[in-house]
Length: 435
Image (cartoon, rainbow, N blue to C red; front, side, top):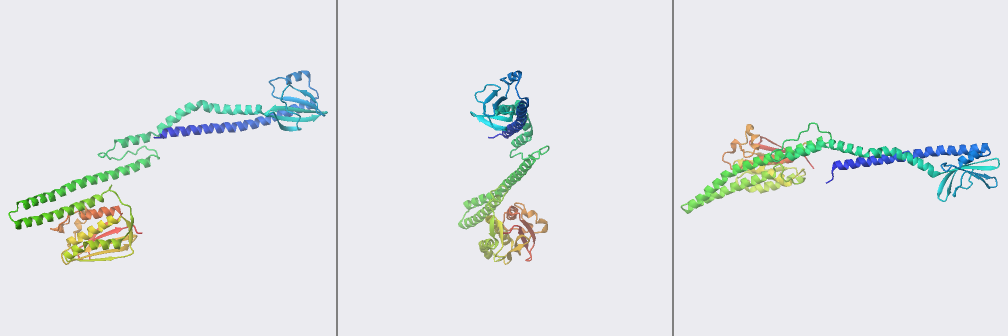
């Protein structure tokens, strides 16, 4: 695992080293340029002074022979014969051009200045390494303070980085304290701008997890409550089959048991459908869904129930209409709406399904000629296991509209209940996205 603190410290130290190197390079170039100008000036002045002087006095000659003197003076006659050299040197530059020039002798570079006067050529020379050494010393002296204070700067950087990262450590500690039972939002007071978005995202995640956990707990509690009654009824009906005194009674008890099993199976199927639409459940990817094809298949599956109850079932759909969604979930939504309409519509009634473009999306409408739902109950019937007052003895689990709303929320759709032109209930689902 890579530490942000270590990475920042190494990055800052590397930046400091690069800055020191840059300062040293710039200082070296600047000092070398200044040394070149200064020493070139000295070469010129010494040569010109000897030209004007004419002869070198014995005292001056002794001074010029000093080994600590960086300059070497040479004098030739017009015919090239050496007349004078300030000191012995095994590799002195030969007579060169007049004025400033550079010469290389046995791999060593020299800077020279030559002048002619009174039948002689006077040349003053200096090794280039002298100038380079002085420039390097100047650069080194400019970098040494940074190198000397590097440990102190590193410690200061470490302290500053640790202090700057303290909010992250605090957020990490707060997150470690959270569990399934405590999903309270993380505190946001005093957070830097760079950390605040992370904490806001974590709080949003904790809120979603809290909703999912609350939904699961409510679902488990409701499912356990609702399954208790049908399972108890099945147990009693099985006992009645076992205790039946004759075949007629046994046949009636068996028929009641089969009907009870059907109701329990329908309830379990509805519970599973609702669980698949719960927040946090696996969500399939959205894709283009042709609504006319989907609704036609749903009505084909519901046709036997409609025929058995002598209910007219019709579809009016725009064949070109498509939405972006989960085909399986939208099929469950439509199937629940049609199934509810058929169950609550009396024999000989009508159920009409339509699908038309509306605004920037599509509207699915299911109208029936049943008893409808009172306006006061229309919001409450979307809760789990809640049925309208007009349900009467009609079998059902009270989960159909809860499943419809859950699927609609996944698709950013809205579900509305109103009075149908047929006299019963109209359920309208508005799906905003079209493709």
